[in-house]
Image: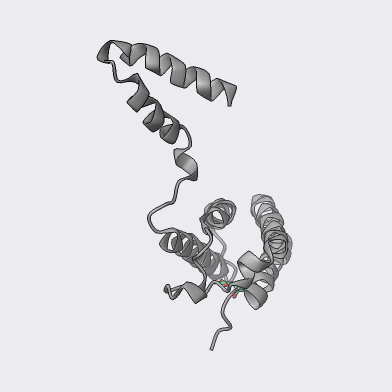
Length: 165
Ligand code: ASC
């Protein structure tokens, strides 16, 4: 807070000559917290990240039958890990199925944040394991890690996503 005040204060110093300091202080503070402001389309963002994970997992499964290009497995494993770490940041309040939006996110996500967070932690652990296993280039090791990831996906979907028909 203090640091923020100081930077606003020095910005005021710069614009003092314009006699607009009082007005400029407010936008400067808004800019400092811009990362927390509402994003345009959080549902599309998280869906894109989750679909990217699904596509990457499909590509991995393709490499697990027959000949394996470990570079492809490793790159897709990295994508899954990166998307898994990011999509969780796009569940603002008011974006469940109940909002009428085109999403399968159940309201229980916001009613049970600890459970949702625990399911996400399990996913993160599984994605770290996936990347590590991809690095070993040992199929038995990788198969186990891929199984763990599928379990983590399912674990969350079973509770927090609209049941699939
Ligand atoms: C995928 C995908 C999921 C999971 C899940 C695993 O490839 O898109 O949602 O695996 O089906 O049980």
